[in-house]
Length: 190
Length: 118
Image 1 (cartoon, rainbow over the protein chains, first blue to last red):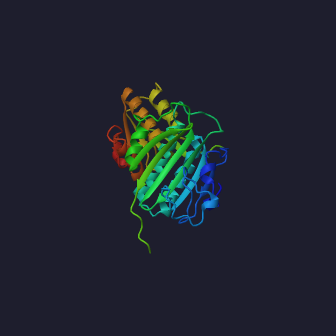
Image 2: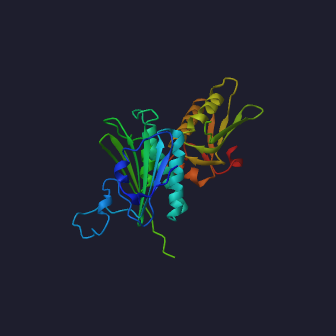
Image 3: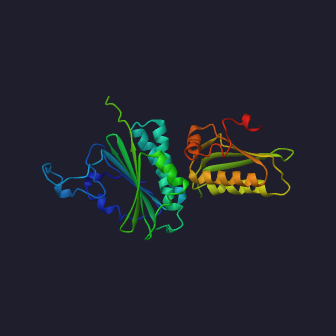
């Protein structure tokens, strides 16, 4: 497993290009520092005083964690473990942590158990955990064939809907993304 | 080396009317199919005429929809074989899944093993 400081820049752009080999890889941002959101990476040469820029920016997370696992059901436990650890770091209650763990598992299963999901070690599942004030947003992303969509009648999708506050599915540029949003009460500062 | 995160132990009563299938660990998409052969063997072997199968999930630490599907398949097979199918799951993590899926009644959920024998 690899830890990476996203403040070195460009990580949002290289997520899609990262090799999905047999090793699980992960990257974590430093809490409180401006990690790049996946679709709006902050170029390294614009990191200085640009706060007056008129362009509306996507809200940056307070912290974010990436973990990429091989598309093999035996590795989903790693994504689950990451969810549990992050829940503890964010001081979530035990019910929220167990719900989050199950939701991440089910989100991975939407891909791995889908009959149209491609087999092969070259495919990986990219999980991103982005923590905002009072909200945790999790995305699970993988390359999918055209027309691929989760079975919204299946028990997994229905459980997902009950486990999180918002649930979404999107497909673009050959990638499918499940987005889970879990809201929580931020811990009081000590 | 293959990761093993589910143990399945089957115990059959002397009169071969009652079976307890104890699952320990995590019943998820990586291990769910590991449970099915034990259930299928119990419920389709002609020399075993069961009154009840008790799925003892007392030491189950995680259950997801893949594991749940195997439990539901087991319950359906038991029903076809004329046997009761009961699930013992005192762990709130497991109970949560059964409640979310609305199957607590279908799986005849019991809070403890002693109460599952009747």
